[in-house]
Length: 390
Image (cartoon, rainbow, N blue to C red; front, side, top):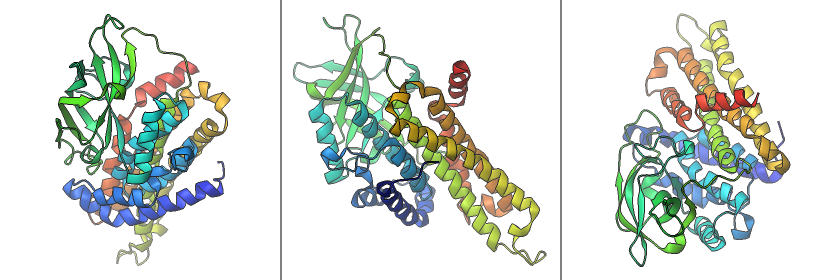
């Protein structure tokens, strides 16, 4: 695997310190489903949120590979927070590479992240739309009132919903002279806008309970014309270009779940070293059965990490290769999320009855790892892409 640079190692060290700070408090937020505002203040104060911001706007200009390394470490402390803040990371990283947003808007958002710890998410999922990655017309509608756009609709799975500053909202546009059949766009909604209703539908979910991934209902929310971007007429063919969005989204999230799986392995190893049943008179870590369980947990993580880091490093260091990396990106995401599921399962089995109690964090890792299977590309789509490429 590539060796991190001195600059990247400094960022990794900050991510590790944050994880160590989050870990003792993560369970309480998971129990209550409360949103951990304190964690996001620490992310801002440490400079973590600005890692991905280009240096021209006051950030560190971290590469995709650099953020993969950091997200893997951060997730060991709190998977919910690492997954949620990844929404800001992959959006800012993707736009930073593509520069497909109006320059003044992107600069404004980046400066807000660096100065104030602003949080951003691309808000697309809807009840009847299915996965936005597979296309489809949003039911959330933007209409022009003569002075501003008015947004009405209902979005799901909006991570960091209680604290978002910018909601990049996928909307349908009405028909016009330029778009006779209507179109789509992204309306950048300010978090303080009137008419936004946050509904907690997530705090008792199976996984990532403190990620704030609830619903947002838009009630006639006003957006200035300049902040409705990426306008496309229905039927406009998508240009052939590198899978930038897929790379930043899939690989940084893969790192999050890899970190969750590694945290489970680290936790059960520590438990096995200190668990000394009276009938055994020595740690259960000395038992071949436990050692095999740990091996079964570790090897998929090692393999997934090697693939993930290699793909992310290739993306960052060899732009000419990006056009053809789609299948490898899908493979890395598939490998990392499934390795986390396997590792957390074996960790629970090795710990026995204590694994399903709150005495250990293993049951939280076990639940949180399952969420990785739901992010695109899901397993079926990833396997189909890899197989089609073969």
